[in-house]
Image (tube, rainbow, N blue to C red; front, side):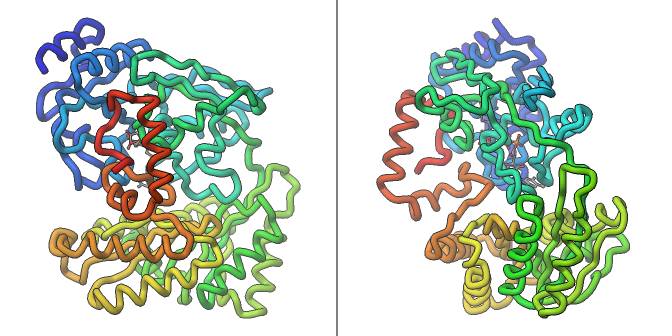
Length: 467
Ligand SMILES: Cc1cc2nc3c(=O)[nH]c(=O)nc-3n(C[C@H](O)[C@H](O)[C@H](O)COP(=O)(O)OP(=O)(O)OC[C@H]3O[C@@H](n4cnc5c(N)ncnc54)[C@H](O)[C@@H]3O)c2cc1C
């Protein structure tokens, strides 16, 4: 390994190669601190040529490469696995915004720019970059592309895949593919960028991207709605969608235990009102004179009259909107403070949300009666975060022996209903058992064929995604 490090020093400055245990540790440990395996070294390149040279050197030495961005991924895809020698290639120093094209509505960035920086650059140019998620201040565009991340506005704007127009990639043989096109139409053979989006760094390294921009939001109306039941939640969602169309930019589901957990961890927080469950909804418009308040209020009035909604509070100011959005953020924060959870990120067809939630409640009630559920998610995407919390006073460590059985049961409930066992977080090393259990032999064969074609020596991220 010393000879590889010596070779890396030929083209990387000393400060870009971390070899000391203490320096490497934050890059070797995943966000949730559940996985930590040693890397030969961590490198922080500053150019695409340096990334390509690192890949060539590692491939030549028979050492695997683990691409990494902000290391906020929730399935341990961006940190080493146990076993083979691996170098972590962290892209955070490739952090330049390359260009903004106002006429073409695009932004070109290096892979290490944070999601928040892209949103801010878009806003400064009078545009919107709509992808938004809790880790946006730390997550990097390369990571967001490689996980095909979702978040709270997928309902209206699509996931990261829908935002990517062009990519620059470093391939397994060290070649650079310049696919930095900003075209909205380009039917010239296989759309190669789609193969790399969501591949979690197993097929190549994203070094830059051209992203789509949207018109800025000029008006928005936000509300927290109490609903009578899970079916009522879908009825209110459907009514809002009928009223606002693609203008319904957010429809988050918060179960009542999740609401209680959130408010308990917001300083001065209190339950806004009691309800069977809650929706956090927002209607947005790109035209200043759009009647977003009217659309929201009319729909809520009807829902309150027909009993699907039981209560509602509409934000009257930016401050009140921020307070409502804070509730959503406080759910995972509160969960972590109270000992964590066995987390799941499932998706089911929207109409199956009620029966899925009930099946999970029944399974946990029967097999793990002392455990607590924290279920929230993105209603319009059918995406539920089904988090099973340890009994009061216990931590995740105390229930370690139950974790895989709980996960198997939750994943099965989703898959049996035509759903996915990983909606937006990906597979990484954490969900790989699910791949073997739930993907068909044909799907796995096709994925293995793509991997073999693009990375025949297995340079990128061994032990991830494919069982
Ligand atoms: C508080 C919190 C909230 C979150 N909310 C959401 C949410 O709402 N929706 C959602 O979808 N996700 C969410 N996530 C998960 C996470 O933020 C996303 O997966 C994000 O896209 C990861 O970006 P990153 O730069 O941190 O990637 P990393 O964690 O560094 O890496 C993630 C994966 O991408 C690969 N990768 C990273 N950079 C590159 C690159 N340049 N080229 C090739 N492969 C690369 C890694 O190998 C790894 O497999 C959340 C995470 C946290 C901590």
